[in-house]
Length: 447
Picture 1 (tube, rainbow, N blue to C red):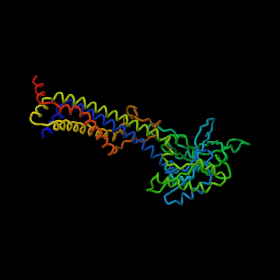
Picture 2 (picture 1 turned 45 degrees about the vertical axis):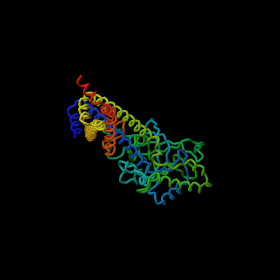
Picture 3 (picture 1 turned 90 degrees about the horizontal axis):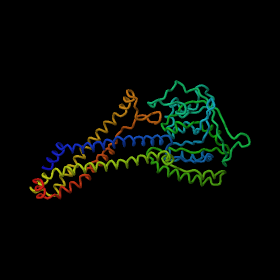
Picture 4 (picture 1 turned 120 degrees about the horizontal axis):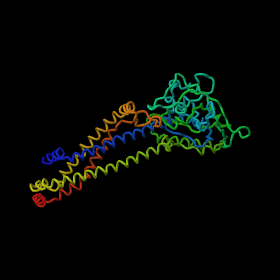
C-alpha cells in the first residue's frame, strides 16, 4: 500500500515529475503525428501504384518490345488464378501542341476495356469513367484519332488540389512524334523519315494521383501505339499487366505466372524473333515500381531511426529527473528501510513510479496526437483561409487530405516504447536508491 501512496504523492506534488511527464508526452505526440502522416503517405503511394499497375507485370525494358503476346494473354486468361490481363505498349514521344513547344512524354498504348479490368484506369478518367469504351472518342470529332492526357499535362492544380474542369474536354490537338523500331532495334524508316508522327485530339484526362505519371503520360489506343512505335511482321507489346483473382497472394501469383512464362518461352524457342523473349521478366507490381517506392520506404526507415534517438532523449530526461528525486528523498528511503523495506521493495517502488510517469505521459501524448490529427485538415484549411499558411502545397505535392488515421497497433507500440524508455531511464537511480543503507541515509539527513 505504501508504494501506491508514495507513487501518487510523487506524481502529484513533485513539480519536477510534471516536467518528466510533459517531456514524455511531447515525445509521444511528435512520434504519433509524424509517423502517422509519413506512414499514411507511403501507404497511399503504394496503393495508387498497385491499383495503376495491377498485380503482376510480364514486361521488358526494351523499346522494341516482344511478340506473341496474344498467345500469352490467352494462356493467362485460362489460368484459374488470373482475373484479367491487359497488353500494353510503352514508349517515348515528343508532344507538339499547336505552337513551337515540344514536350517529351511517355506513351502508354492500351485497350481501354481490358486495361480497366486489370487496373483502375477507368476510375482515373473524368469524362468517360462510366463508359470507358469511349475513352478514346473525341467529343468534337468522334471519328478522329484521340488520346487521353495525364491531367497535369494540361490542367493545373490549385492550392487545395482541385482542378477546374469544363463541361467537355478542352478542344486541343497535338502531334505525337515517335521513332519506330524494327524487331532488331533498327530504325524502321531509315530510307525515308526516321520519325512517325500523328495528330490526336484530347478526349479525356487521367488522374492517377501519382505525380510523375499524371505529368508525363499520354494514353493511346493499343493499335495506334503499335503503329507509331513498333513495326514488323509480328505485333509487339512492352508488357502484359495481370490482375489476380481475390484471395490470391501477389507473390504466389507471380511465381505461378513465372512458371507459365517459362513454359511459353520454351515453346516459342524456335519461332522468329524469339530472342526478344529473353529480355522479358515477370515481376510483382512492387518490384516493378521499386525505383519509385524504395526512396519513400528508406525515408520512412530513417525517420524511424530518428525517433529511436528521441527515445534516447526520453531516457536521459527520465534519468536526470529520477536521479534528482532519489537525491532529495533519501530520508524517505531511510525510513522505509529502517522499518523493514527490502532492496527489492525500494527498486519496485521507483520502477513503479517510472512506469506511472511513462503511462501518464505517453497516454497524454497519444491522446493529444490523436486529437491533433483528427483536426489537422480542418486546421490547415483554417490557417490557409485566414493566414495563408499551408502545411503541404498542393501545387507541388499530389495529395488530397493529409493522412490522419491513427493505427491502434502503432499507437500501442509507441506507448509501450515510451513506458520502456522511462523504465530504462529510471533503472540506475532506482538501483542506487535500493543500495542506500538506512544508517548512512538517516545520518546524512541529520547532519
